[in-house]
Image 1 (cartoon, helix red, strand yellow):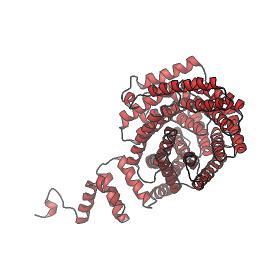
Image 2: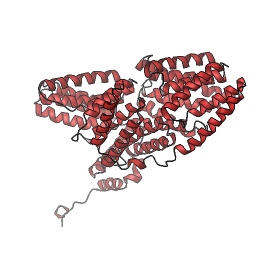
Image 3: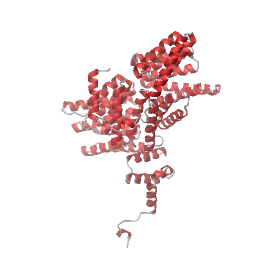
Image 4: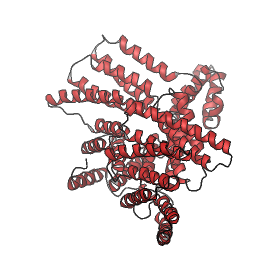
Length: 563
């Protein structure tokens, strides 16, 4: 009987081999990278065909990129050329191309290839502008939202602002014709842009507007992203109760809708870690950041920007967690991984390097301080200095002098100069940081307290300005207690500083007083965070999304505007 008469047709030996590799993909995926490119393509094509899903497709895609196949750029270029060819075609052809572009650009955006995604969305937007009719206005708004997202991700904030203004013009056109597009996603992206630029009051204002736009018909992804951005805006405004409710519901929604291995779930975990770190639950933030990194490595692997940012977040939280122990190996590993990935993918002057270099510099400084070899200490301090200066220049170029991020870099340099025994330079940097932060954030913000405490340490330990140091310590303590309570971790360094200060001036009554205060703090600290799993109370949600949104908006109306 001929093969064509059978119910099945035997595969060629080559296709059988490809099928065998795909059947054992999980075990053999690392070895696949050593195969010739044409064979890799056939393997990844079949992986997609047999239904491994988008996460595995991301992994396959990343493997090609790591192997030097610039598939993201090729796809974006090919799509852009296709759009230029069909510029004179009818509206239906263009609409189909826009739909394809949204899928392609969305995939590239989700995978972190923002520049290529931007090219795709710009081509889509160009097609939208060729027809000045209502359906194309809706498409243009949707395209602007996607374009704003990738420009935010790639730190192109000026272009992001232009994109938002363009979206508003299309919104106005629709409004004049009695039509409305939902603004939740657009306002959420604007909130993200303003947050990144440290315009916290404005970010908070727009997060409220985004929350007002949440409806039951919105895609879950949009709802999750708005809740995430609103939570972060609340954190920096020190509205911790609101932030907690929003981010916990976002985590629950993402896990319930997308699953525990999905990139969107990892996005919510990173923002949950940010919340935990800012409310001083440092140990739990480390665990959450690690969980987010594990998901991103599983989905993307390789040299991917999403993996890099997760490494950086984990590096900083590990640095804070191990600050008192001096064990920085894990923090340094993740900081260097972040920098290594970013420098492999992006230009050496990209803004994303500013924060990762800053984190590594902080870690190197602490390692240097504990180093017993003078030559090694000087080398580490000099490397930290170079990293801090590079970060400062990147921040000033992007944000200018009068910005919270720039102020943070000044403060970091102040601490480093103290370690390098350049005390006048250290004082100058700390004063700069305090002045900028006070003007932008107010007199009683957490960031102000950090800089005030660092200046107090400089005066106390190295400049013998005890009266000034005492005033600054007491101010830092007052802010810390007001924001975080009696068990705030940062109080330890202020209490120890005061004990040393009062010893130096011979005020032993105060020494005894603050020894007792420190002992009470230690007991309180031991009891404060006994929870073993920060995810335990987000596996289920006692409230619906509608209830969470209404609770937030009602609280806002009761309290009045916060900006």
